[in-house]
Amino acid sequence: MKIYLIRHGRTKGNSQGRYVGRTDEPLMPGERDKLIQDALFAEKIGQAYELYVSPMLRCRETASILFPGKEQTIVEAFRECDFGEFEYKTYKELNGNPAYQQFIDSGGTCGFSGEESVEAFRSRCAQAFECLIMRHRKRDTEIVLVVHGGTIMAILDRFSCPHRDYYAWQTGNGDGYTAEASCDRESGGLVLQDIVALRG
Image (tube, rainbow, N blue to C red; front, side, top):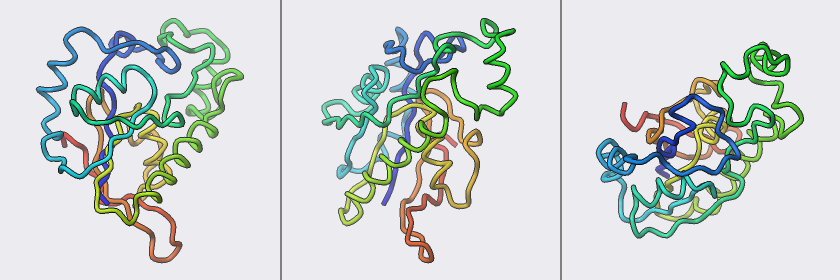
């Protein structure tokens, strides 16, 4: 089964290097034209596909631009993580914050100051994705996700084969990956193989 994992277009917070999680901001002015120009991969997606999106505005807008008229199925579990006290701040604004320094020193694994833990965020994204794929495993269709960078990273961290860690899967706005979903012959679990950058 062919999978497309697409990160939403650029927002004001993205352009300023901010931690944008629960902040529900729209795409930047002019982003529509940039998405249409850059995302030629959308033309390669077949007619038989299902479109799933995060509930956040930036993802719904991106999906509407790339796939006009296509019905969007919202998956609540695909929303970006809540960055807690780091939300909508830049690394410069957080410089000197002990909690942020701990987060950096931990390699991004210690969480966001009392909000959703990193592991909880990654698990909810991966579990929702696995459920979605299992529902479609006997259908002749492609699956398109328009979600967040963190959501994509969580999914590929859990299911990539050969495995690469979470931060190895960072991708730019309006970019992402294609992959083939299948069941591992030995474990019977879901794996994503033949992973290629959309604009690679």
